[in-house]
Image 1 (cartoon, helix red, strand yellow):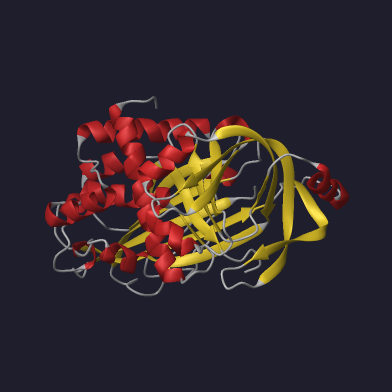
Image 2 (spheres, helix red, strand yellow):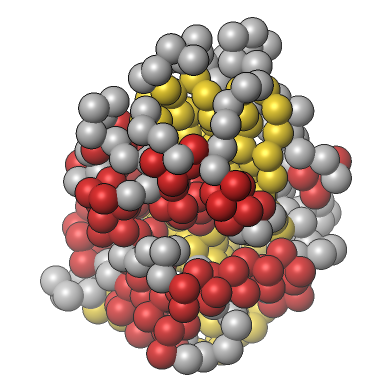
Length: 399
């Protein structure tokens, strides 16, 4: 598994010139999964059937940071979208514990959720806001000069690789002169499979796209004990569900594949809910299987303003209505940009194996096979909490 890096940036401009199972953990697991699926469906609408990946963990982290400064209707809209508010002391303490646990458990496997606030020199922030942010999910404050941006592209070095915060915020030219604060949250993940795949190098795998075109794509293969199940969604569509663990069992890749090649993903997507995902996950059974997956790499960028506005988060982007008084103690802040960039690459992690071995296993083995040879949905989840780090769709592994 190659590095997965997801970045979200909220550029705030001034309109002035200057762990264990509990009722709360179960509720939050469902809320976080519903948020992920809501984000997935919104992104799917914008991408029109193509590949994409998006990070619910990164998006929700930025919205949580904004909640610390939001008041009135702005705060209510953020809470409605997330399904909870960090202004609730019980929720705040619980989430802080979860984030601390995730950060501690990521040592050695390259997993981190973090947030950096780039602040224009001379900007005055509320001491309470600074204290809350500094305490939240490995967050930090960094100085910046928005009037002299040295980059318009979102390129960030993962913290766990450098041990340092990103050196500069990735803002664009729009709104730079009046910008006062940029909130950038990142989620990075890099790990190896609990059982590594071998590559299928001499025989490409057939992959049937939604339009019926059959492609021949690079693939990878393993024979292993995996968590697998066959289910019906609410509309009666049959789906195969597979969960693959990463090293240390800290995270897993959850795959949803229509059994019928003629069933498009957009027939499955409306029926995916947090309770459905939870039910499927609890009913998976350990099964020895031949597993064939395509290798793929997805990189995309979203303007989150359209998505968040469609959810009812409108005041946040309005200079006259936004109430982010908790950030500085004064009126005037609003969000001018909300950008999300994601990249994901799935591979066998350098394992070398002859294609003959894989082909022979396919032909001779009597074990059942899971072949992701048509469009599928994936969720990268933290294994113990079920929190969704990233979610996406593979429609064409060659795109």
